[in-house]
Image (tube, rainbow, N blue to C red; front, side):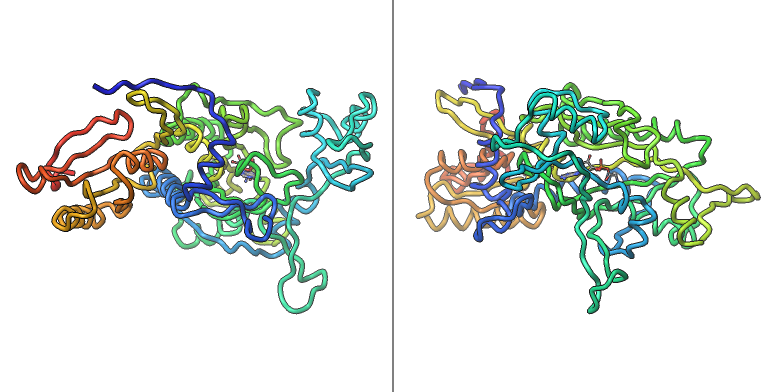
Length: 454
Ligand code: GAP
């Protein structure tokens, strides 16, 4: 009889970060040289988990739909893209400087952490709040006035580093979609509404990257630009709102931990007429998981104006033409991964013994099966276990061979990386029934099954 009890519901972020490093999910970037703030490297299990999340998204929103087209645009784009999109002028965060150390902080974060309400405040109002309340830097020093800071990473393209060579690492994948809208219309002439989807890296020079992978300087987005008849934007917005819930459920996140926040006009991005942020109850607090925005014809209109190319869509069989409006669900891979990781992290007790177990949904688990011989010094057991391993490996790919230490230690190790099933070949397999033992990660119960039924 298995005695199974919850140790605690409090999830400790530090323990999750430490497990992620120890067990090969996520390492601090450039760690060996002292790190590079705001960057993270994915280890073998992290990359498997991340790919499972990205593949699930592609399956739900591209492969299973008739109205979606995938693209994969270059990260480096003509500087005009970022001028037309408004990012050169307005992609700014409020920044303050410690006047002694010259260290820079995000003014809104500093004030929020000190308990002040900052939503919708202008730069002058933020400065005033600092002065009125004598707010100091975390080092206890005086702070500068609040200024803006452009978050794009600048680079130059080609051998001559003049103004014309300047471009930026893309701060959102969306622009690579807008610039290909006309190409896809010309190649496929899809009916409206239709969408373009892209997954890929985005870069932001965050003033204060923090909270593990939550706010990084290099991260990955999965974005959809859904082109609609301007008269029908509300319908499409509602459709994508429901699709976002479908996504959070597919990630295994409980509905009660996901919250919609209608973003006030003064807090919306420069391109948006309506935004709902979907927030999640992370161990660090309730924070943005992803966003859903109504971008109007802001982007296609700007492209038309700056490039001089016509972005109008002609409704088939009519003379009706218009620049489509856009609904944009924008998903962050790292935030989805952090929600999955922190949801999975569980401490419980089995037969009086404490354990840490990552309860990943089966379809996201980086390793689906671990296969072992009961002991490693019996060649006939090892040979049979290898046979089972090879069959499963061919079928599922994500299968691990594990014959280190005793069987109890292997179970603990596999629990910690969230492997749903541990398959063990023992003496009964060889001598009596030919069945293998399969242990369930969550209940720890064991069943005996035919290897071919796994
Ligand atoms: N194209 C719209 C856009 O980029 P956003 O709200 O700035 O909108 C969308 O970003 C999503 O990208 C966020 O909801 C979040 O999931 C993710 N994201 C943004 N900045 C991030 C960062 N510094 N680190 C990790 N993820 C980030």
